[in-house]
Length: 407
Ligand code: PA5
Image (cartoon, rainbow, N blue to C red; front, top):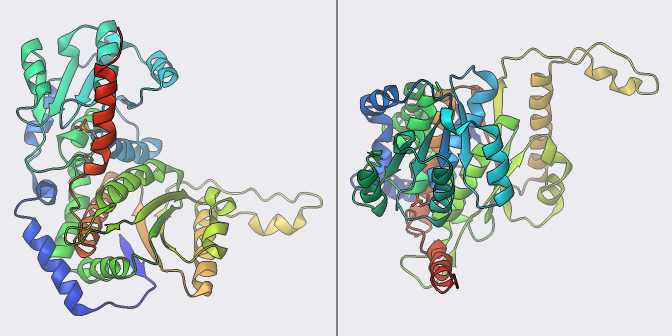
């Protein structure tokens, strides 16, 4: 994975401060260790899941589902997988009904994932599905040790896996939360972790990623008042759910009260997919307020030779320049052209991330890159990257409304 920045190198002292902070954070923030974990327990547990279960369902929301979904939807189009994976995340009744129509519950293993073990969305959906299929052995629970969910699971005799200590929901994709559903579908989780490790080692062992990511983080933090919207412009449909994961990671981690001031700060994530969003959001970036940075993500080799045929259409001869061109080349030319146009503006911060191909290794690298970047920027803009007090208020009000509800 190559990350090229089109903005100037940043202050060495600030970079050093950020490096020291995340180096120290490794002592108490759990996600940093995940690329080096021993996955034998997860693999062994996966082996115990009944082979007649041809479908896996994740019941969970936010950090408990978005990461696995991002990886699955990236890999699925290019790899023959062993099982189908569905995500039940929403309380939208139509969504629940239509998703259920796609599966045979008797041939499904359900992974109920909730770090807190009390999330309304997850347990309303679980209750409904369990009422249709009340077989405790068809369910595995993933939660924090000692949560109410763990107590429930041990009462019903269902299996429980734990999140590792001090791993927040949105940083948990490389733990059992993401690894179990992904390995159950035949995705190479070893390669996923190897990819993550490549970024971790390059960063912490003073490799190429160290200076690159520090420059990017310092630039984002220093200019966060002006360039407070960070667009991720991914040129592949397969990265659509990666963009959703990024939006959660960045938004929930970086929109906070500062730790040492009374001010609210925040960086707003936007996920865009090329070329589709060239025909919508791009106008706003190009000519709108200068408050956006853009990161382009490109896949160098789509490993798909589908090409535009050598066909000349009457009255449309000007489009003959497309003839013979593989779509994989065209989409990257489109990305390069938009990037060049934005660079010509001179006041829009741009960088590019190129990944060689669509596989588990590369999505693992991308995931760890963004987790680490989030930690660096959070440190520099002086927020607690790992909490989310802002989402609690609505949950408390909902719980009161539910408690006061007339039966
Ligand atoms: O990142 C987070 O902490 C949140 O988005 C949680 O993942 C989300 O609220 C779901 O919580 P839980 O896993 O406790 O059900």
